[in-house]
Length: 115
Image (tube, rainbow, N blue to C red; front, side, top):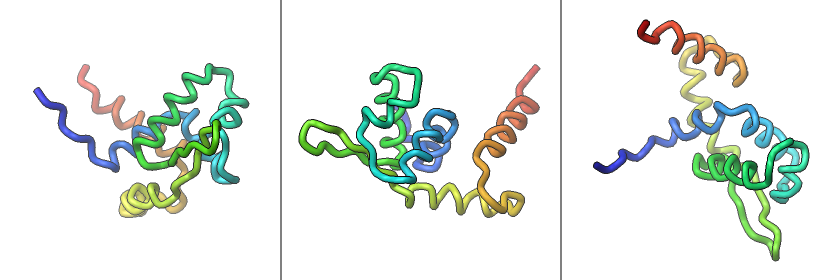
């Protein structure tokens, strides 16, 4: 059985669902960063950070490139455009507050869960 491809909007929301990944995106708003610099403020292994970066890259939210021996990460802000347009269609989300949106989704899932 073959797995169906995941639509890009689903990949973006899956990537944004984790607070570590949202923190990484916020850090990359400032400037491109080396992977080791991205990992510095977090209390987790470089391998764990690399997995988070892989998920962000797979969703198109960041790009990575090797410069010499150092792997750099760059924010790809256009990747959020589709998600932002989707959320704005609901009208209740004037400014995109992803933490509030995550709480909203968790509450909706909890209410719709079979008992």
